[in-house]
Amino acid sequence: MRLPVLCLLVSLSAAAAQAGPYDGRYRPLQEIGDSWDCKSIGVEGGAILITSGAFFTVGSRCALRNPTRVVGMDGTLYDAICRADAEPWQRRIMILKTETGIAVLQKGAHISYLRRCE
Image (tube, rainbow, N blue to C red; front, top):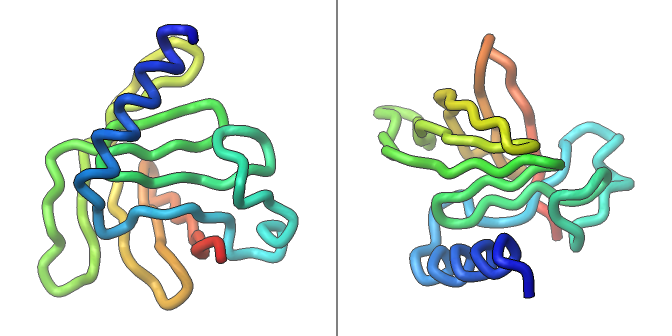
């Protein structure tokens, strides 16, 4: 087994022990999300996975650090430390619960509405 895959499995196992409020598999709320595969993670047309302290999307993964509850809203602000193609970056993101899943707010007030996979 390759080292990066082993590290990912170890981190997912540790994360499973401390489930977070947004843990789950998600796809876009828009009609395009109907064709997404909720079983595959990290591939084009696959699900977005949030698991305690980690956020996995197509080609990137983020460690969610310093969770800060947002007063008066069902949401949390995080420092996201991300990697894609070995290029790291950092940004603040907010995750809010919605009726069908979550809303993710990030850089430039970009909002992604995601529904929970069934």
